[in-house]
Image (cartoon, rainbow, N blue to C red):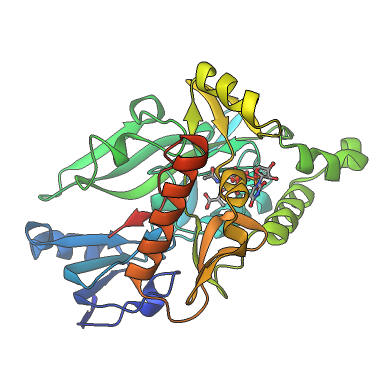
Length: 335
Ligand code: EPU
């Protein structure tokens, strides 16, 4: 297992915040996983990261960081309608989506381009363009912390909700997801509820393919979202807020153009729109600003410190609270 003492974390988080941890362990295979448990790493302060694409470091981390880099994607089962694919937690998410496209398996294509790893996808139930990963997860496998007893959770045990799951709540910091088994469709079927995606694809009719959908998703993403490999950020910084019907009626009497969608427990609003309407597209502080075409994303344009991003995002929360009476919450993990 690779280990580095007191490394800079600048290249291990996509926000490119320069801070340090005591030790960085890189886990590449099952033997490394066993070694981490043998060394009792989880009995001291620790943090698990993937590509560091959903994290904001606000200070040095006084403990061990375990970076997950295990690889492997294989078809493990098949029935009349579905193919079951098991992927290692350290696989890059979009590489997994490309595997499904190459094997003509349906269900993951709208999620191409989301940063991060396979092992992180169930934690916040990643979603985009009308799809959520919960719709294709069959089971989640891993080890309980700190001792390493194995677990398997079937989909209905994962308590999936919008950007949420049991792994963020009851099991927060209590488990390590090492593999995810996905159930993908064999039959041609597309999810085109996202208006802009449907509009771009309507002309293909029955000629529509997985490649076309994935290409179009990537084009839409690139037109709004920064390239995380070039611009320091962590994707959507905030979650979209859900308000009650009553609150929504109050707000729409005052603001007539609110983007909104039905949600299981109320009405979901677009945090990006609320942030933009509070004027944040015009505000840069040092190297921190929102992204010009998507105010839901906060960007480090160079050498921003973690605390500067914290000050900036807290001011955003306050201004949305003052204008709309809604408290938006970070989606990104703040450490
Ligand atoms: N909007 C604005 N101004 C902005 C941003 C958005 O007015 O600065 C409006 C848009 O015009 C649109 C609405 O808000 O009418 C929604 O915008 P968009 O479709 O871009 O989606 P979103 O709700 O802002 C969510 C996800 C994204 C995902 C997109 C597309 C969350 C927190 N974010 O953003 O996920 O790519 O939908 O499905 O749910 C991520 O998680 O890192 C991420 C990028």
